[in-house]
Length: 178
Image 1 (tube, rainbow, N blue to C red):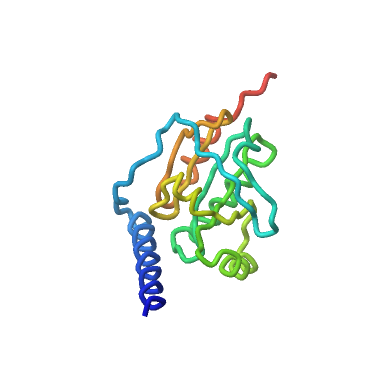
Image 2: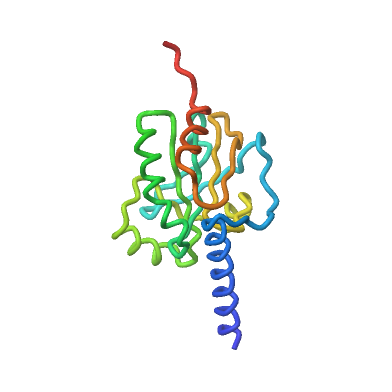
């Protein structure tokens, strides 16, 4: 009985998060959630990719970081993957990195078959509860733009508008001396 109730609770949470992402995707408003303070230091993290390589926010100091929280079961997350690939490709060679922590409960089991049939041109990470909580992930997709000095400069709930995100990234890229 406990296992049934736990499964029911997990299913209800998945449906609620999918509904939030779908509503935002369809132009509706996301529910109010407390926002991380723009201008404050972005929460640090250490997350592994599927091969076990560890990624830490501190490692990317001096670069602009786009952090995109997503899940394989989220329709809006899957729909924005081509736009994220374009953003990553368009920023190659610049002081920029796109990291994608997945909040899939089944972790590798969910990600491996999905990534085998889906092109993703940036690191996909296994998100932990501590990081999801630090970034206040209550709906998906949720993305955060982090300046080279580690400050949070923008947050986005729902599918990204690629042109807007690219402009936001360009504004934060370090200026080069000519």
